[in-house]
Image (cartoon, rainbow, N blue to C red; front, side):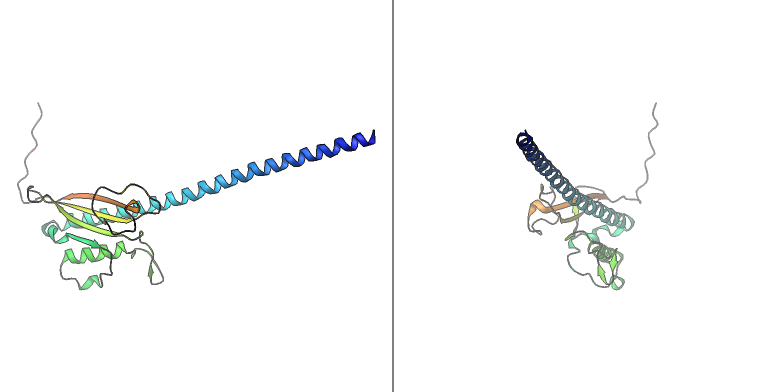
Length: 194
């Protein structure tokens, strides 16, 4: 009888040990899944942060062009922010100063850690191009910012920063179209509705 009782306890201990091992395995898979989700969330947050910074920069330049609309054609440039523009205070005209300051912003001058500029999006590349200004009475300009993303996705449709990054699937870009108003033309009064 004692022997039978001893054998039952041994087999019960083996079954409990097996259950503990299975529970540990399930817990390990759960923890690995959680860590994977956290890593993907961190990458998505970084991508979203870079996109919001790019939108702020695009909006900044579009407002600068709107304010200096008489010289809007002086803003057309490509590859803005890829090199140090130097001292912006020495630039002769307002458009050149605006482009210089925007280039500094693209390079991260908005936030500093000591002397290092750390507020930049990854490999920022600015473009300002004229859009069909030959056929339009009111000039239009596309202001775009391209940067390097973290994980591959589809490449943007417009050209800003094309072939400037290690892979087109890592290129991200946002753009806005600025239409320059002609404030010298007489305003047409609204037509009253019946």
